[in-house]
Image (cartoon, rainbow, N blue to C red; front, side, top):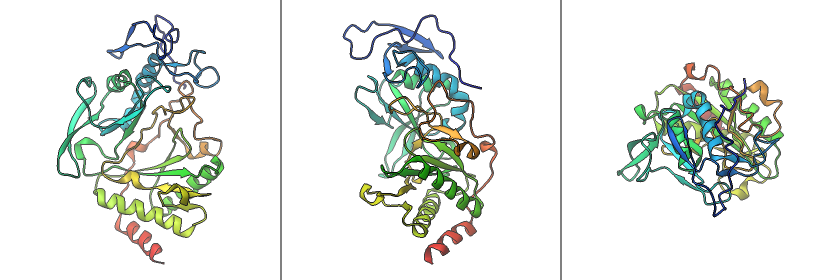
Length: 330
């Protein structure tokens, strides 16, 4: 079933772009949130044949309605996690910045919590619990939502491991797809079941849901060891080196998403990239038919989700750590 657009009492794409000095002052209520300048074009290139919208592009109101409709699926993974928001108040043509600490004037629909950071000082962090929180973030110019791998009620017990496959510029998606399937096989051999997500950029995320039984040091240790083992056994295919120069012709297995305070793009988040692609959960059988990590836009986003992911009961066990570390030692 495709995500549709609820009927509106006016054409939300009928306004002018953010660069006009004569932009009308208009508002629209979505999920109880007042959206100012709903006609503002966020993505000018997300028109017919791309996001399925009008020639005017993807407006702020349309973006808000997308998050309103996708909320039941998106919040399964994104709710109650500390967030980092990528904000583009004037759309793709304007300034962009990440924000993880809520400032003055943040709407109440975006909740706040205090987290003790590495320097020992407490700082405010944002999180959402419902569709109103997502829509309120769009009102502030948010396009992308990035989430911690832990929820706020047990912040020191992460519940997901993320491996981000980031290809060198010269590699096509075929190489990424093949790598994702290969790493899935390696994880299954260890006793871990991963889920796949197209990032909406260049790569694929392998997401391993976990019981909340271990802490950050263990999560990081396993992720680093597993990625290093893959690179050690197939050095022409993978690297764990962060430097761009070391990635030439290879795929960077980014294991750094698994540190305390790190984030990864949330499932169903729109990406601030040409055409407004979506970070889309995808079945392993579907992956064979996909030709790009930007395969899904807003109007084509489907109620796919990760069937059964919230019911998964798996843990990083001592034999798993030992298997990885023994193989690394040679």
